[in-house]
Image (tube, rainbow, N blue to C red):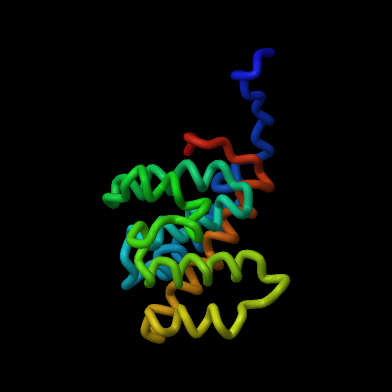
Length: 155
């Protein structure tokens, strides 16, 4: 094996086929969570959460979806280091959403009052509830796809 070869662990099961009722419920929950939010913002949050959770499948899918939503390569490439990205790369609203997504993903420490207040300053109550919903749905998708070893680029 050369250093350029990637070994791939086989998928464990086809979740959608094995538990279709649960899968359809997740699809419906995901769609409801996104309502009223900017699609590009949703993709940024989903990509960042997937990076933190180590979900290659979701990261691959949402990077492609982000490009379709008009996201630039620069913003996609800088997402892992959004805290250090130059001013203007991400808006304050996006930064507030990303900070909230990170704290929801690393829930062991809770969501700080400062991060919650920052998000609440940029999102109305309903939008904030949808953003929180997007965060918990992508965390659930990440856990499903990591546990089942869903392969990036597959259906």
